[in-house]
Image (tube, rainbow, N blue to C red):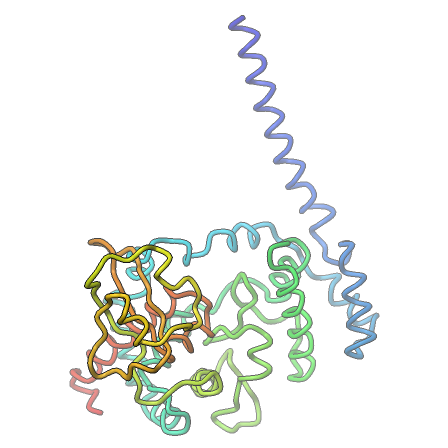
Length: 342
């Protein structure tokens, strides 16, 4: 009996290994080249008929595109799925704060110009670029066309979104005169210093240094101006708060906290639940009540309009709060640095 059980267990192990190998083989053979993927034909048809692309040129491009399983593996492990205290420490730390102060000092004039033009504070712009790419140091090592093709064809949960971004990317590179096979970015196809997805690049990127090119890969001036423009067009309210910590004066159920990012209640309604609201806030403004798992227990926060605007950059409450806290730490250190008198 023992020998039979061992044989059965061994055979099951072999079966699992063969299954894994067969999946890998699909990527190596059938799924390795995008040109061979069955979904590509419909994409090419749409690009030709609706966006006036040349079919032979598209096939030449996609002949060089590789679909990569590690992109699927990476997108299934987002940092936003981690606890708040873990996520916060990832982005709000001494090194990133110090580098943020240096970045502000280095690009002081451009940041001041962008803030004056849009009303978006310099420290928010710096924090966004700091969270996204460590101030331009790490802009991604995946070929954008590989990433977007892989996610369009082989990631059903968001295939429609990435298919749209793939089309946007091809339109972007055509208009800007860029070889679509040349750009590298994140595993999700985000591009450049501020990590704009292709649709955002097309709509919100600006030629802030006025050299005739919207260059988010190499120009910090364009990156800074484009982040500021993005926030302005998404409704940033100058000189208004972003998010405030709060305390509960009574016990709340989980359902009484907001699950959506978009504010659906006024501060007055939140206060009536037994939540402390700072007296300097206008009670008729819309807000979001949040409970997050802090290192020393639950934390309670009230997000306002500008907090919601930050979530338009990345649809995550953890992301928006980390950007805010990092920005405040950078501003404090910058204002107190010997070279940072503002």
